[in-house]
Image (cartoon, rainbow, N blue to C red; front, top):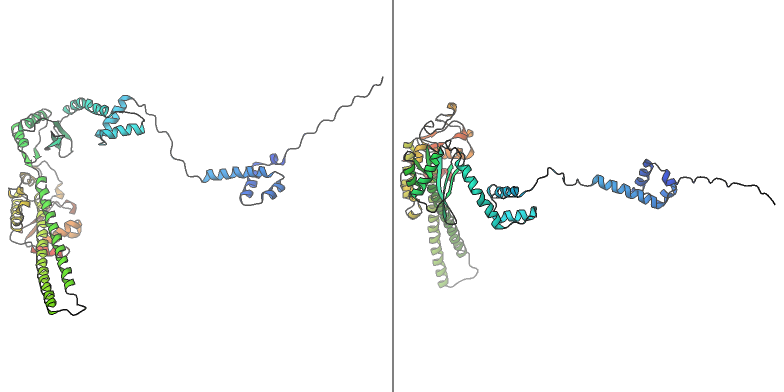
Length: 446
């Protein structure tokens, strides 16, 4: 029996770390930058004793970092707040869209469908609006209307139903919006008496010439004057200016057409013509020459008429019917002058002259010419003055041009409130002076 000595196996030595694992972060960055700048991949692998796959991995990491650094900023996805959407909140949203955003009922349905993924019928939106009417009526009847000083009243129609409307001129607050079955004096009187119970005691009202409205106010508020609005006077006046301006353009076009025909008829002939043809050509030239002369005269008359009427109605709008301005006597004199000149200049189209112009001066203009204190207006004393001599550089450009035109007429006086932006009237005593000077100044560019 043989006993052999026991021998132990040598301990395995630990494997050395791979060169790629031994690289520090800065060395890896440098390796990726060298690869991105175009260094050969094989040479970098041999230099650092790493595989080409490892270099490609580091290059991809560096490329992603560069892309993220230079990428455009992402959209703002920060959540501002979370809103609990309940059925009551949706009803509030429907009312807000209709009353504040003036959306249609179908627009509300589309918004809820597209943004909230909430399906609602057209009838549901209509019922929500109708359900809020009672609460809105109670809220409106609780308002104190004692602060309203000047009210504006009118009728509008919604689906052939008359709606009585009243609004405060200063704040545009609508204190009356009532759909009625009839639009008569009794209905207006009842609604105005109800507003009197809410404290509405205006100094005056403004309305059109409707008999029902004025009759109802005369019965309910006999002590409150109802002034006539100027819109129904100025609107047809502006239409008259547009009509005369278009007619002047047509006269210019007609004159241009006749001149072109005459120019073609006067072209020299290339070949000799017979005596009969030459005589016919001469008669045609004479006829076209006569038409050109008539067209030029008609053009001059049309342009002069359009300019005169435009100046007259500009005085009516800016000087006579303005809220603040000269005294009643001056307004009445200018008003009579404008009406007389319009009558003299529009004999061919009397139906286009507003019939309201042939009446007396609107009563709200007379009220507007009262002292400021009587109309409830206040103005600093240092800004209330009469301007006898003016420096046109201190006025707006359009006011200065108007002053230059009127300044060429004799006996011109200007009244204002001090600064250029506060000019309230241009008073010209032009009853005995025609508009030739004004028209000449307008054509000269002033």
